[in-house]
Image (cartoon, rainbow, N blue to C red; front, side, top):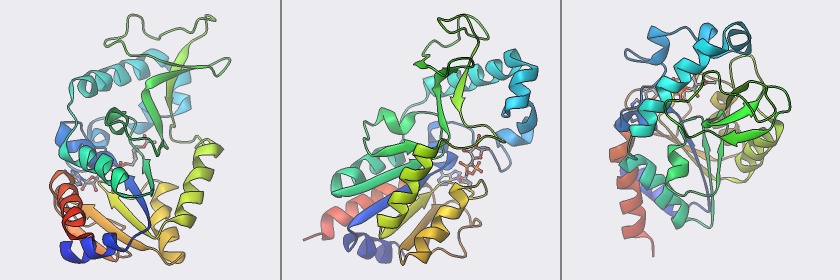
Amino acid sequence: MIDKAIERLIDTKYLLVITGAGISAESGIPTFRGNDGLWQNYRAEDLATPWAFERNPEVVWRWYDWRRGIIGRAELNPGHLAIKQLEGLYDDFFLITQNVDGLHGRTGIKNMVEIHGNLWRARCTKDGRTSMLMDVPLKSIPPACECGNILRPDVVWFGESIPSEWLQKSYDVIDMCDTLIVAGTSGVVYPVASFPQSVKERGGCVIEINIEPTSISSIADISLFGKSGDLLPMLVKGIRERRV
Ligand code: OAD
């Protein structure tokens, strides 16, 4: 299967990669679903909705601050680095990540949208201004904007829409790509969960990388089961060795 994936990638002109929490699992960052997933121990309704924030911004910020602590100490893993290398191997490349951890950004990758936002960025609840908030732990919770109003994490919560600019960019690259690698996502959160199907409908090839079958596996042309930190570097190596 890995050889088939490498062959396809050698013939690919425009490569799109979609990632989810699994890509950062080998950096020690908890995923959302599965046995040790965050949603086993926390209720999304209490922490990741605009209503939860309205009710109790302090609780929501404390949860994000705890996650910022884990992520702040985490190191990039070979999966993140391989995706950065893939960007260098294609003239046309784009990454859509659902992760808010900012780890892809740390690799220096340029062609990317963090479609669910970034937990190192905060947004004013009044005027919408954004700013990077790098302190861990935060000095005051909830943090305040220069204008005096409360800041919120600049992430997309359940019940909120993805900013139209990010969504439009995603649809544009779905139209243009000929191969999609979808790695480390359970594929259950929309709209991203529908992107692999959209790529297929436009004649593109879907290569899935995951430690186990997911809802995407049935439509994937090639499924590679294993850790993204092992498989992605193997793909990079294979492309480099066999490309003429
Ligand atoms: P999930 O936690 O739903 O899925 C993580 C996926 O990664 C699972 O399919 C795992 O099998 C897989 N996985 C775990 N370790 C892996 C490894 N080392 N290599 C490859 N795969 C591995 O996370 P997401 O699909 O990212 O949204 O979740 C999507 C969205 O749901 C998140 O962005 C977040 C969450 O609620 C919001 O907060 C809006």
